[in-house]
Length: 160
Ligand SMILES: [Zn+2]
Ligand SMILES: [Zn+2]
Image (cartoon, rainbow, N blue to C red; front, side, top):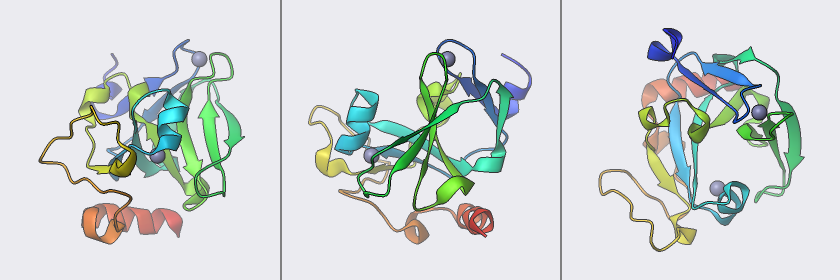
């Protein structure tokens, strides 16, 4: 696609109305196998690129924010294309608006961001076979034990 897509990470919805660009690599990529993510995607898991909100530039269009229930009980805010309703990223109550969970499947080239960890494998669909070289957790992990130091620093800066 564009030159920017060589260094950045561009993506968008299915109808093309909303386009975004991540201006750097994310801090971490989670593959979540929880039942909530399975239902929300209609699939077996979701792959979320965890990145500072100010590193997601809106190239075209503006998503609409839809509030939905979440496993924590605190709700999740999902950014969707107002026309085709494809979900592009979420904010969770824990990290607020400062951190976005960009759905890797909406990138033009999702192959560039394989998961750094698999989480909630307790409800992984049994036919999904995980690679041996990626950490997997029955529920979640401690960030301080899994995230690179640089990503922890970025997260601290974003959360103020
Ligand atoms: Zn759309
Ligand atoms: Zn999940």
